[in-house]
Every structure is written in structure tokens, then in C-alpha cells.
Image (cartoon, rainbow, N blue to C red):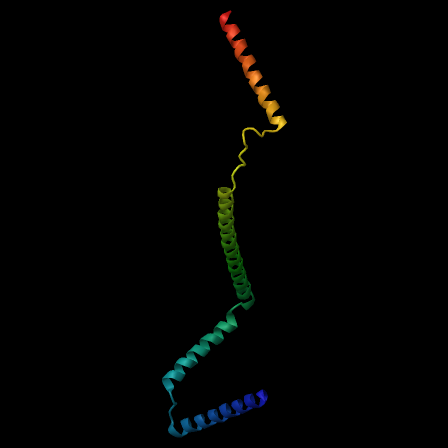
Length: 138
């Protein structure tokens, strides 16, 4: 069906062209001459560009530019994602640190190891104080 539509459009355009040229020959003037002259100039310019431009180099340069822009955008998006994740984790750590407190020990319930170390520190401190006092007396 689409081929039929394309064929009918092509036939209408062709017969329209033939009708337009016959009307122009009878009148001796071009229909919409100003617009058609400008269009002819643009078509001639485009034809010259197509004939003289190295499209392979143009496409290579264009593909490099597009790839660079895509990589830049991906890096930018990933940086935004990392920063938002960092903010989320910072808030989470701040929340956890504010909620967690060191366990408080009751004075009478120390372990045997802690009692031994405390005793050792006190006796060490006392012996150090006595040796300093003896040195002062001498």
C-alpha cells in the first residue's frame, strides 16, 4: 500500500511539473520567479558544497565531537550520582554516631582483668612517687 501511495505522489508531482511548464510557456513568464531564483541559487550552492566537501573527514570529526560530548555527560552524571551518595552516607554516619553511646559501666561490676590493671597502675604510681620523694630527700 505504501508503494502505491509513493507512486501516486510521484505521478502527481510529475504531471504538476508538466502543467506548470506549459502554463509558463503560454504566459511567457515564470510563476513565482523571485522565490524560484533564490531556490535555484541555494540548490547550486548546495551542489557545489556536496561536490567539494570531504564527507569522510567531516563525519570523523563530527563523530569525535559527539563521542567526547557523550563521555563528558556520562562523567558529569556519574559525578552527580557519587556526590549524592556521599551526602546520603554522610547523613547516615552522622545519624548513627549521634545515636550510639559507649556503654556505661557500673562501679561495682568490673571484670577481673580491669581490676588487675587498675591495681597495677596504682601500685606503679605509688612506687614512682616514693622513689621521687627519696631522691628529693637525698
